[in-house]
Length: 196
Image (cartoon, rainbow, N blue to C red; front, side, top):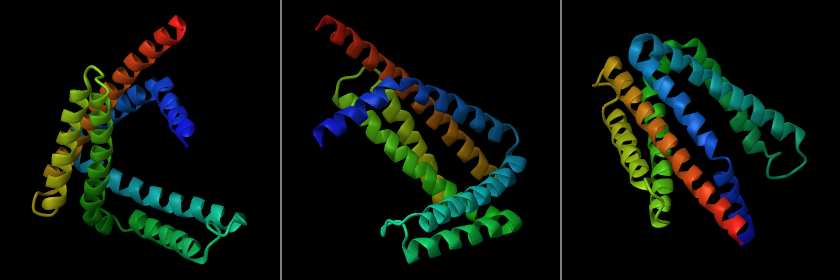
């Protein structure tokens, strides 16, 4: 178990550049959402429906093609069919999508902020330089997510989109900071491996 844990950590450090690229992409999306708030809101709603539908289709294909009892399970098949139906409804009913979007994005941002926070705290506990910035931007993402969840309808579409854009930019900065911190750890690990 310990070796698997260390191998997973090593893979994360070895692929430090993925966090950097992901951060750049998320920041770009945040700025696009900020510049075109109304268009972005409905586009995000449609993409959300497409993602739910695609997830349902892929899970359904996996469930039906697997002989494993944990995957080929009646409840999982039913859940996949429900995902496909919800996805279709969200794609073709933009009013419902627009209503549900702040809640779904708020929960997603809260989750991503929390996971990034744990990574930042983990880096700080290992005395990695700059881990505090990851913690800071993760807290910003969590606060913005809570604002979106607290009053999704009273804030209005423009305010929700602005909060989401700010959260995307903050999350992207945290991802880039994580990438640079992992690059630091990767360089030090390589240097120490060469010395031994």
